[in-house]
Length: 101
Image (tube, rainbow, N blue to C red; front, side):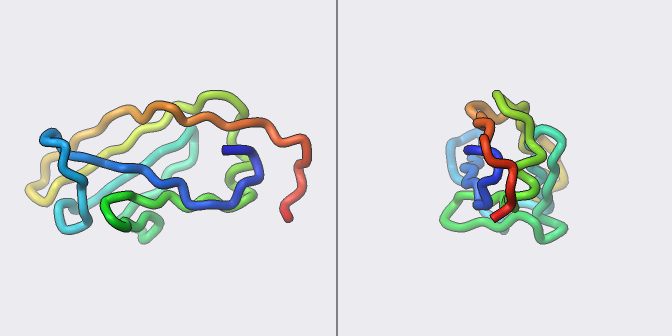
């Protein structure tokens, strides 16, 4: 991803058995990229075909520093158990232009 991109980042979340996590399986999903946090409960995350969509505006992605970002996902399952894990491979390229189009 490049700074200034306005897009939905698709993030596949699977349970310990490798099955994709769907909204019916959870009470809450939280995804954090750097300092940017969005949740399913607040209506900021949606799920399509087992892939959770993390929407980024151009302004939000300009706020992300270039390089590899720390990213995490946390899930509160329907039974109330909460679990989290690191996300890997989240890299932001610096944009030469700093204009929101």
